[in-house]
Amino acid sequence: MIAPRVQEAALSLAEAPAYLYDLPALDGHVASVRRALGATELYYAVKANPDAELLRVLARHVDGFEVSSAGEHAHVTALFPGLPVALGGPGKTDAELRLPHHRLHVESPNELRRLLGTGLEADVLLRLNPGLAVEGAALTMSGPFGMDEDGVAECLPLFGDRVRLRGLHTHLASGLEAPELLNLARTLLDNSYEEVNLGGGMAVSYTSETRFDWAAYGAGLAELGAGRRLRIEPGRALTVYCGSYVTKVVDVKRVRGQAFAILLGGTHHLRTPVTKGHDQPFTLLPTGKGPEVDGPVTFVGQLCTPKDVFAKDIETSVKVGDTVVFEMAGAYAWNISHHDFLMHPKPAFRYLAA
Ligand SMILES: *Cc1c(COP(=O)(O)O)cnc(C)c1O
View 1: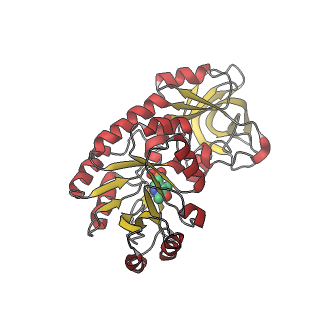
View 2 (view 1 turned 90 degrees about the vertical axis):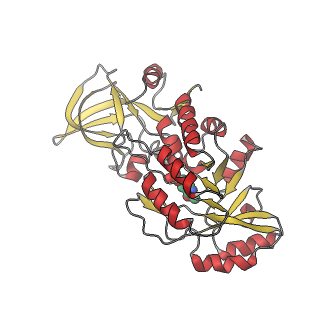
View 3 (view 1 turned 60 degrees about the horizontal axis):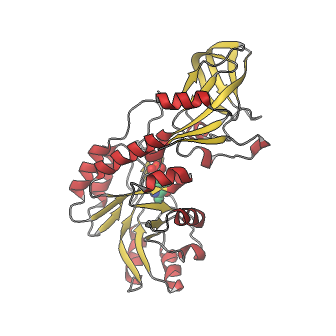
């Protein structure tokens, strides 16, 4: 369900499609996450959504930003020169290894050797890929990310005065609930490192109103982390709820029995339902006066590809001119989409003021 102020804003938009960001909602959500975490440090993983207006709200609450490219680094340090930055990502170039940072997440022994070769100072967390079985995750970050225990052992003798080992970094999976994440944390914290970054990946449900249990996670981390410096770096679970993609129905039809609503824009603006293979949740506002279709309706965009589907076989009735507000479009939405495909106009971007 969308908030009344989002509905009101969606109805008064002069243009469609448009991204609508609810900044007061983001502010309230991140403030409550911050409170639940106590002494655990909170960084925001910028790759989830680097929109500057969102970052400005996040910057009031987070301890720093996690960036994974020179581009994200330049973006964030230009906006917030004073805020700590943790720089990660596989395949860092020599230029990226030279960027100023609060923490550098090193992904391999060879990367560490290249870092040493720069002669610069650095505070390093080694990214561990612990090969733990992760049940119930949407996406497991195994494969090329980080290093195994042998890789860590190879790194340890290389550290010195200029390049300092601060601790471990991990990011194991995406889509985990608090008890699973705490179990993983318990296994990982079975070491002597004083500082550990446990990554992001908190579960986000696109089919129910349930949200990640930050209170339970924060309390569990407080217990596990006693005497150490713990940090997490969520992306999706912080920003996903504050964004909507608002558009209009431009045509309705029935083709060989199947009902379709064709919307302005498409998944080149909101790729999330295609990448996740889900129906993007939405609210239909009955602003239309045109022809109608009903029954199970499939919502598609303007792209000339059968993959351009937002939601399939939804029991509803739709009129040309209706307004469709796709919810949960605040993370991995616009910034992961293939904007230039077919050269349709870009959406507008509107912000409800904080
Ligand atoms: C993607 C990523 C995150 C954020 O993951 P979410 O699922 O958006 O919380 C955090 N850390 C690293 C290293 C990542 O690659």
